[in-house]
Image (cartoon, rainbow, N blue to C red; front, side, top):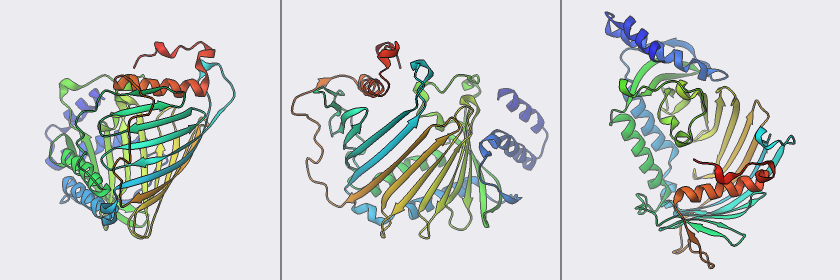
Length: 375
């Protein structure tokens, strides 16, 4: 990756500004090419030098705010959730098991825009209550054991009382990081025709110093980066010229060997009703479809998720949502009647993981001691 960057820099010396722009776009295209496998196809490609990637992204984010977040969400003070999930996978080699593992889980509960929630999980993993109140995050097992995190720090969303404000806050934070903080480089890459509609292509990459370069990893993504890897790498976004909404996104992260693309379909109200994710990462090839259904007022009411991999793993779930205009005081209580044990957040997560894994695979019977695992 570093040597490729040096080569591009060497070739760019002495070129005109337009040639330099084309070289950068070509370099991004090389990195992103693998992510486009089994993805959408662009026709009639062309380049319009007067267009700005920064302006196109700003228009896209404004269109998402306008189209995806109808005013009805401003009346939503809480949401009831019911979900049924089925997981069918091959067990890890370390367990010595050969039969496929099938798991059915049901989840029901309520959540609020200030990030409080109370969920009851039921299935082969056991019965577990997951609770986050104003002051604590708790895990309660129906074996009589309860554990709580230390008192939570200040919640930045504590005063948010509706889901539109919640979504706008996070969208605004993302917009500020992408457009104003200077941490991401945004380029216009070209235009074209996608499924009969004109689109513009922009590229995004996180700016990094030369001192911060790290060697390519051959190992999987480290646990401490499992939820943050998407902040690095290269993106290419296709944006409809008419609606200004995103049509497709391509992601390439050579350092962590992650390559993927996803496309977005819309209904007549310009609400997204189908996301298709294609993972092209070696050893993790697979396809995910997420279908969304809405009420007449544009509120999300049903989510259908299907996941298939080349290794034969399968997962699907259906979740129904009902947004409530009123949220009673004390709707979410974090104190079980039989008390709890105080532990820190890392131990709380580890307890949940070991409880789940233990019930699923009976790992202790196969010589694996979960207490020796470190994260």
